[in-house]
Image (tube, rainbow, N blue to C red; front, side):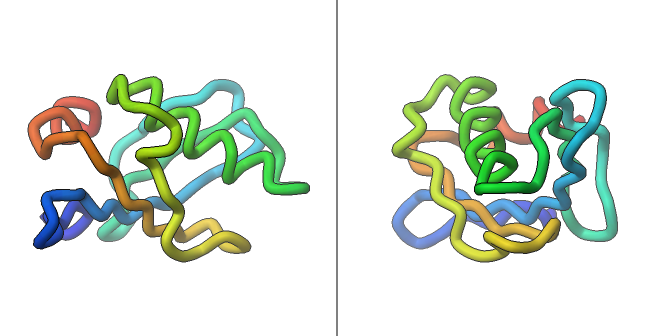
Length: 95
């Protein structure tokens, strides 16, 4: 799947398209080759980035420290690295 890549160390790299200031936090399918994630947080002062980390940590039941934004800190298109999650967990959330 183009939005999900397993890294050599076992971590997962996800491609996201983030829509801030939405009505609720939710995965709403795919946008091009990325997972579309709606967040209630505004895109100011890093609030949306913190919400991305909190969303994935809570959804996958992993610590926030296991979620890292690798690229796209100032963009809607982001790449995040997940440690301690497996592909099947992520696929169930997206589908």
